[in-house]
Image (cartoon, rainbow over all chains, first blue to last red; front, side, top):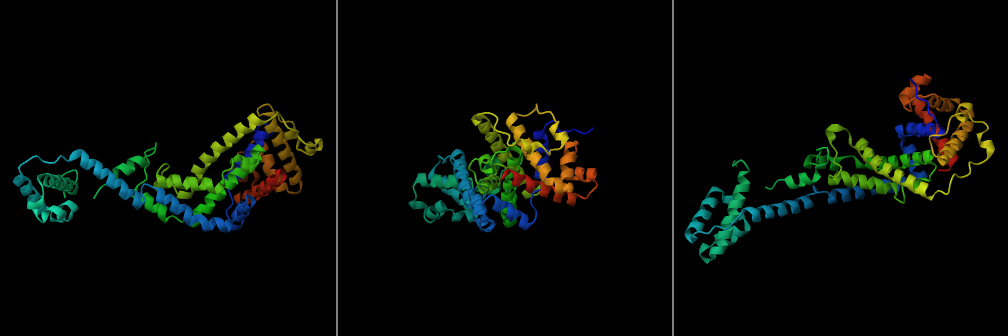
Length: 148
Length: 217
């Protein structure tokens, strides 16, 4: 059963629906359509890199934004999960040495570099903070299931 | 070392599609030199078509937004994850066009509302002889379902199109087929008129050029 348009506006609407179905395909048609709207096709194509790069830079997945977000998330997680150990100084130092023995790469962490050279010169509080950070980093390296 | 869970949560949309590093990489590597102009021209094309339908000037329809701005907004949305593209569901350009259509439809609705609220009443329908050569089927069509202004505009454009296509029976056959109730799809018209789809496309392009010329868009 054919559905005939009841009004001229409906008929015109169907005609425009037909136009909408398929736009310009050739470069000539595209350029003509753009020019008719007052857009210079050459300038438009020249702007593409700027437009796309700006969108990418604003994306949460752009490396800069990602690094900042990851850092913020890690800091949040560290502050929520890491409580400096209240224990005798020698136990803290022993625990630090154990972790560094298991994962020597953690010795390059900024706090470890400062304090591990000379534990004697570090305060109890600094050592407790270092242990908390090393425990956090060790847990991150292990992953949620405890595997490395 | 650190995962992207937070980022992915932010990017998740209502349908559960999320921007991922892999999709971001694909977006970055897409052929934007082709996609960007194609998206802008889609916006222009649809806005000018809607001008034929509504009688409103193209610039009024998109309310001061340049078509490039609309295309840029769409590109920003897919990169931000606000409207994440899923490569498994289809190619990028059709998806971007769909997103642009969403913005355009909202602008068209807004333009229609503004137009109605500012309209002092039905405008002049033009010269009486505009309608003289119109096909009888059109002249006899009831006109109750649309606002008078819209009807007058449609009547004027169609009347001129019928006149203008007097020397182009192929293009006029499309108008008649649509009047007879054929679906406004290239494939149905090709079947109805027993010609190739390419021929239908060429005919409707001629019709569109005439419609734009008639309305000065």
